[in-house]
Image (cartoon, rainbow, N blue to C red; front, side, top):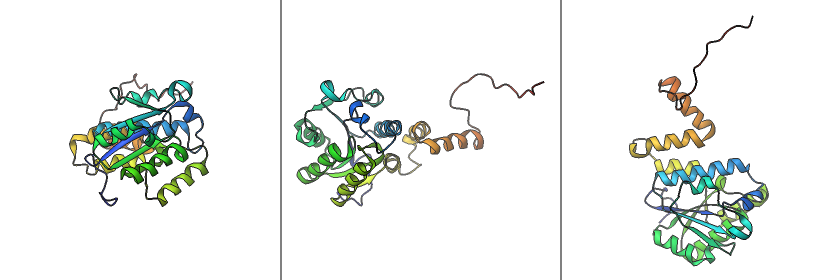
Length: 225
């Protein structure tokens, strides 16, 4: 494998690490609602392209709380790989899940960037021979500096920094891939902010597509007396 080789639905897998309330409470590097939006958007992208997905959690019952329901709803059949270690690589279940997927490009979204993401990335690269693609805007640290310096440290070690929408569009690659086109556009409208609003505008105002949702009647303007 080569880092010059683009991410495709056939060469990559994804791991979500510790997207749990107590971990999110400590995040200060990104707005936490934006973080959840991006994480769930990334998860839905993985679902669209049938990307092998691992979900791992730490100390759920004793400290961290339950994984975002919105994330679990995307993968209702996936097991949750519970751990005690901050480093996911230390748990054999995680190693086995990654190995079973048979893909060396591992996309990572997790909390916190400077602890769980860092340690997993280094060990998976050193001991497992994986290429790590760290989703910067679907991960968070306890401060802006904590996140940024952790990203810097990982990049220096060979981790590839990416964003969730970059991953989505790299998987899609060509709008002629009609089998995923509609699902990708639906995801963009829901999770891609201004880009999604722009798509909605173009569909309805330029191409005259019907609105996405039914609503009450639009009442004509009436000047106040």
